[in-house]
Length: 308
Image 1 (cartoon, helix red, strand yellow):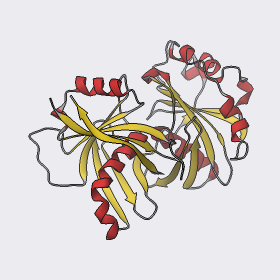
Image 2 (cartoon, helix red, strand yellow; image 1 turned 90 degrees about the vertical axis):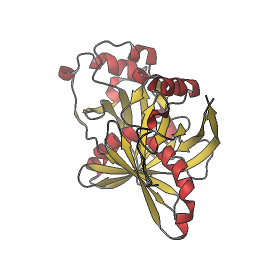
Image 3 (cartoon, rainbow, N blue to C red; image 1 turned 30 degrees about the vertical axis):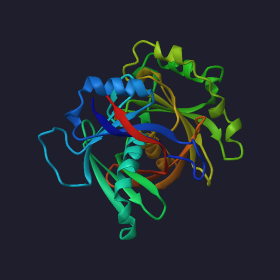
Image 4 (cartoon, helix red, strand yellow; image 1 turned 180 degrees about the vertical axis):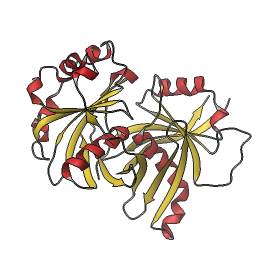
């Protein structure tokens, strides 16, 4: 029998509100090969959160490193491994920054680095004055998309919109880097009326979405609409193809949203709110070249050991 440190963290939280943001499990391993991929997948299924992160000091038991700011990182849903997950990265960073608390007495910011299987090096920085963690991710621009590129697009939109009319669609874009479809809805919203918006009234037929054939291009759908000066854009995210009906707050989706809305606003810094039942805020700051910082708050919910 063996055990590993384990936590559940809410990432991209609403300030001063409990049980907001997106839950992620974080398992801290001595090395990535301390557990087989099969066992990792079973753990992710057992925990049954949208993402479980596995972080370690090295890929192999034989590797040695004394650097306390470099780690390996992988992300698994209950059904499969994914190439990138923002909220689980932020949750992992929060767990690791707990061991570096002493640095807030001497540093304004502390950065750690993750080596990943599919996205190379990623960095996370804690701002000790705000307690916000920022993630340095690849920006994922989206391009206009049409039926000629995906024949089942009309059916896909029908299942996404449910009883909502297709006239409510402003435009459709696609991010090749993340395989996410971005559907912008007509109109604008604000904190005072977003609950009455078309975005919140969407009732996707998820069983219909997941059964659409010929949909290998798309791993998730972002529905979004313009916001106001207070919150610049609003979104929701659906990914039934990877076992996630509606994700509470999605970092990888914001690599697409940041590219799109920054271009619309002609600004490098914008604030987004994902309007799931839990909701969460993501501060987005474009970097050069082709990078974006996704910044958010986090809260510990569970700490303990995972016993196998």
